[in-house]
Length: 146
Image (cartoon, rainbow, N blue to C red; front, side, top):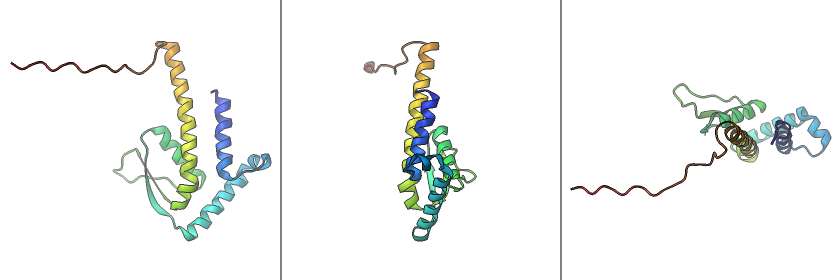
């Protein structure tokens, strides 16, 4: 997957979650974002924001989640002493389950696939053609004590 295709795929994911139904709406992403902001406000009336703790293993996932939160004008933060794997945010449960987390998962999967493809290509072209995982073998027998 080249970068152009990656950006197209990410824009398509964004359009899906912004509720765009026509090309005109996709072009007017700012308006779509406003619709999501309005949805957040409506949801907050019946499902008030709570403090969420997201634990994400890699920096790429944390960056994606933080960027999504900021796009929806939600402040990501971490308390002093919390691990770098933690992202905190005050957001409604319904928004997380219906919009934020599904969008995050799709974007993350797309980026992981892209990064994996690039990593595989770089390793095979510069280090060794075979970059497969190490093979699994039987453990050595224990030496008899004697």
